[in-house]
Image (spheres, rainbow, N blue to C red):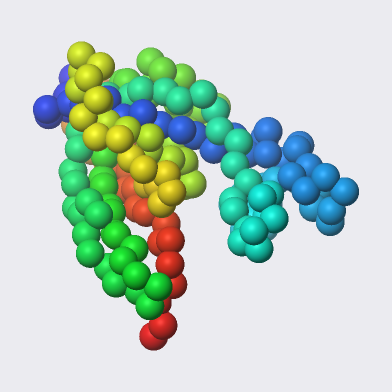
Length: 177
């Protein structure tokens, strides 16, 4: 017995497609040869609209809805910066490995969950598919940590059953210290 989620919802996840980003030249004839920085393990920044501000170059897998348990910490809490309000949001979602395995979100060779830092939360839905909460992007909510929890709950065949995933926003402004 591996347990179950309490009061489940569906999380719409947009996983970062690092393989597709590595093969695409985001700036044409510019200096970049790929859209993913292997050293910093994040999308490169490109000023695609010539406004003087670089935006992350992202390619994502098709969205997938995964059952989860929602543990909200803060949603659009007031955070003031010199350029105005930049709301702070933070969510923890708990996923069951049984659902991740069923949806092909566990690497068969390593056992690692395929939900990783820089993946994006698009929305939360009720189990009947009704929208509960959309996440505005930008700023968006992105995975900052994904760790297995709940090991050894079955006495005869101990296994892990839960994945705790932390999502946080990306600040839209900088404050002066």
